[in-house]
Image (tube, rainbow, N blue to C red; front, side):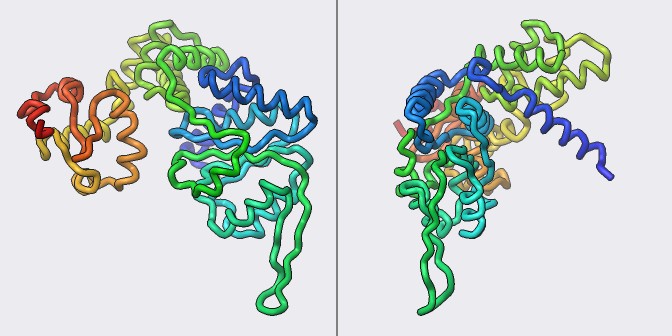
Length: 338
């Protein structure tokens, strides 16, 4: 029997699919990528061929999966969805590729986690449309080459640096980086989502949510749903005051920092004099993994101007001190040895 928490997770997953744009006109932001993809898809459609393979990369929650769905919808073909960790063996990849229809889309999320032996088998499939399978072992081993239907690989990753150079070079259709959204774009996304959810909200409320959404649509939709729940439980209109109460309850401050973010800033200031401090030292002091700090916390703190990354380590900026209501112990120039 499902627990209330599991039911809520299923409900939120269903809502995420409902809020996902189904047409290009509904997809807000990433204008450069949309223009390039429009040219790529239109040319392929005119030739009657499958588009070339595409790689999308950038922080989580910016719309990589949504773009893959829009590409498949635009072409009117089916899309097979999988992920790098799910393809453990060559046989798994063979089963997926041989079940694709002509011109179908194969979407591989987190492709940087693909097994290296599987990656080697993927190369001829991408370049020549064939799958080389070795049957048997030792002297009796033989290679079977299977012809594959034409298909397009749309891959997504949050860590493009972990992709091998040979794999990156196979994406002849383009390698596109998704950028963080502006607050104005996030406001438009929130207003669209609120309309779909049937939740009336004031312009001030959408602006208050956007300011705390960390420039990410996924976070914005999550905060909107939590504000909707709070408004429903307390039978109140979803206005700016309610948004501030809800997000304070969730631990979000005025610029979207949570307690873990603020704790990282405090540790750099209180234990290391504002920095510079190395990543490994900071990880030990915060009891977090280096990858978590580098991939989860740092990008938003840097983009918000609260910390900066220097050759000597991480340094809290004057804006970071101001946000926590702290005063630097010494001028920034002296800390940097200037």
